[in-house]
Image: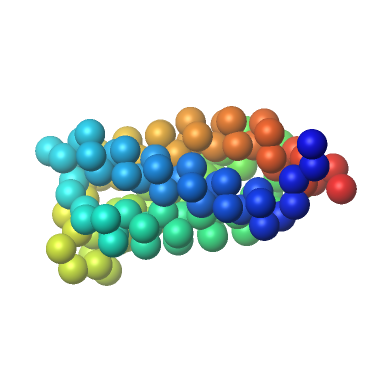
Amino acid sequence: MRYGMITSFLIKWVAVTAAVWFTSLFFPLHGTMNFGHVLLIGTVISIIGYISDLVISPAANQMVAIVADFVLAALIAYMGNYLLFGMNVTWTFAVILGLIVAGVEIFYHAKFVTAVNRR
């Protein structure tokens, strides 16, 4: 099955936003964010991550792109602590979020990034 860029991005957005929501629900001792923060952080990680997937994946291998997504997710989540009112995030929360997003990205890259890059 062939996936277009819009479908691929929407699946990435849903998966990353679900990962951010999962992290905020199950790790409240390390960070708190409301649903608006979850949507905003998930959208920012998805947009920047999708652009980095288009640039990094053809130039390097998938593992480099997944590590870049981990670092990107952790940094964006931690920066949100300073940029968004009412969001409280520790480094531990940011690293946990980065690990969960990287886990989601492993499956995403296996299915969608290789399909889009083959065109």
